[in-house]
Amino acid sequence: MRFCKDTMVLRESPFPNCFLASLHSLAWGLIFPCYWLLDRILATCVSTTLEKQKRIEQECYLYPLKIIFGGALYIILFVISLPFALFGFILWVPLQAARRPYAYCYNPKVEEKVQKKWVSKESGMLFSFISANLCLLPDGLARFSNLSHSQKRSCIIGQYIMDGVCRPRIKICIDSPSTVTLSPGSKRGSLFPSRQSSYGAIESHPSDEALLRDSNLRYIDSSEESSELERKIDGMSPNGSINFEPAAADPSVVTLAVSGHVAQNSVEGLSPTGHPTQQHTGPRTRYKKNKINKDAYCEISSLFPADADFVCLQEVFDKRAAARLKSLLSPFFGHVLYDIGIYALYGCSDFKFFNSGLFLASRYPILDAKYRFYPNGRGEDALAAKGLLCVKIQVGSTCQNEQTDIVGYLNCTHLHAPEGDGQIRCEQMTVMMEWIKEFQQSTLKTGEKVAFDVLCGDFNFDNCSPDDHLEQSHIVFNTYKDPCRVGAMQDHPWAIGTLLQAANLYDVNVRTPEGLQRILENEEHRKLYIAPPINPDGSNYDCEQTGSPWIGRRIDYIMFCDNSVSKHYKTELEEFCFITQLAGLSDHIPVGLRLFVTTAEEEMEAL
Image 1: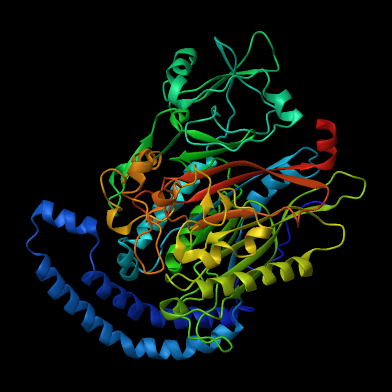
Image 2: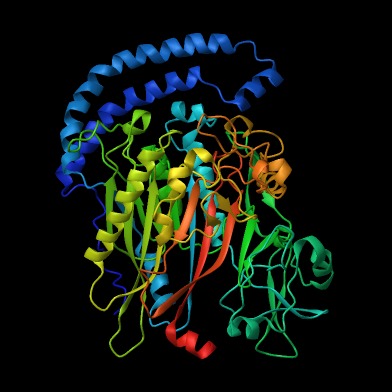
């Protein structure tokens, strides 16, 4: 079987026909002016710390007048738009019953590239995943998290993701002190793998395949040998490009001349959020890596992983921000699900003013998708349709006489947020596991082989806070493997909290990707910027009393499951990374995971 480039499994519009879609557009067009003006009124009253700093530096004495006259103008226009919004609302609410809970964007040109890459591929497969909470709420609400300009942030974030994933991922190895070479057939490894670093490792025995592959390689460590590498590399082009030349000794080996250029995502000046635009010019050898085991690394990276296959985002609540992200990512990710969730009244649920905030982009064809919302939300979380998105993806086919589809399952979620509501989150995770099982049982066809089963998202609890003790022992961790976790209340020493302290987002030390990267590499410095673990009474928990390393609140997860993977395949962790590229753009640190899937035949050959 081949990927069908002329047929879409999913319908692009969330409505079954053009008439309902047009009616919905009309209703939203009547509502939007009132919605936008209300958002501007709120944004006028709430300032971020960066805006306050700028007003102090610029000695802006006219700000109170701006608040008074600007706010009065917005209120007048808001009152004028109310009758139109009321009519649109009456029209909009019943249309939600006919709406499918997601919109779908399809780019056939990207799918054709994937087809050429994966059809009838016998060797092992690498899959790279990214998960990030972007806090793309309406601007007025985002300011309560010390963030602003959601539309402009969505453009910058989308461009950053594209700049990161579109750059080449190359494995550099040194066979001799005077030669830098790149093996064209190398499937695994990332740019400049390093030796075991200072902050902890988990012992494991390497496979024979790994020993054979790495027996003649000497890896470059960023902290020790970057200067040596710079002396050995030449042939850099004037514009800082990467040049490939055939090696004289061995025509099968490609000599690589690497400049300092990695990716340029720069725009003159500052972004609207005060995020300094960066030209990433140093070689990636400077980024520290820490071994998880012999074949897997943990990295703190200032760039998004290269050649990512799947991007799962949370808190993309704003419709316009979601549309901007979709437009930016669709040239590389051929399949995008956005505007995911329900609105208005659905069954016996509370009225939903916001969707789930989930967003998924895939380079591979999406065969089926199912969204379900959590019915037990409480407080402000009940206003949003937080839930679970389950997706079945076709990643290739076997090259036997009768070709068999190779599929993967990707599940993205966002759990209940308020602290102290651990029982609600446990109930949500319990039904989440049931929904995932039901989806896989109902969609897996006879003969199909499962290559991976991944669960990711913002779980809103960490593995070191006593206040989260219920969630830490949930059965989800018996099924899915969390690479950062040792057990309940214990993470690996190299794990890092992913929730930033909102008040310090614009501190000069963490306003750039490189600055935040340096802070995360130092445990003492991390304490100033990562949200601390919490006790049941809401006070900060001191990890040092138990002798544990200080991790901080790690509430963003990417986990994978072996049990649901077909017996013909084996899933191995290749790399886990904490990504600092969204410094100043989000109050969460994105995480990345790369899996290496091998067949049983390959494992036998390796033995």
